[in-house]
Length: 116
Image 1 (tube, one colour):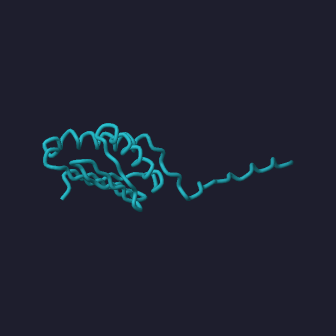
Image 2: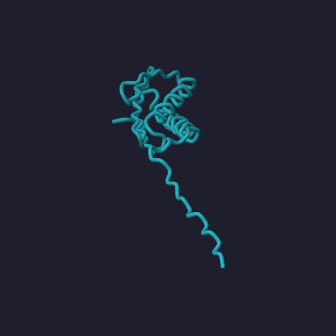
Image 3: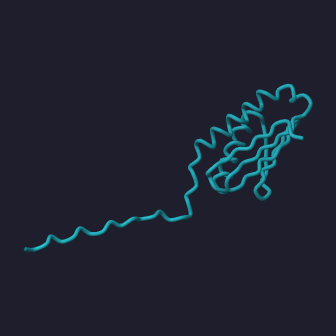
C-alpha cells in the first residue's frame, strides 16, 4: 500500500497530462533527486528511499508513492511538496483542445425593404 496516494482530474488530454507530469518530476528532481522513466502512460520514479508511479489518462492523474523507513517520518512535508508541484503544473498547463468543432450559428440576412 502506498504511503502517498493522490488522484487528480484534469482537462489536459493525454499529451498535456504527460507534459505536465514531466514538468512535475523535473521540479521534484531538483528538490528530491528523483529520476523516472515512462512505460506507456505510467511514469515510474525512484531514488533511495522513494519509489512511485504516476499514471495518466485523458482525464485523470493517479500518483502513488512508497516511502522507505527513514522518509516515512517526513511523509507530511514530502506529500505537501508533491501536491504543491502537481497543482502548480496542472494550473500552468493549457487545457486540451476539444476535438469537436465549434458550432457556428448563422443569422438570417435582413429582409429587403418592401417597395410601395
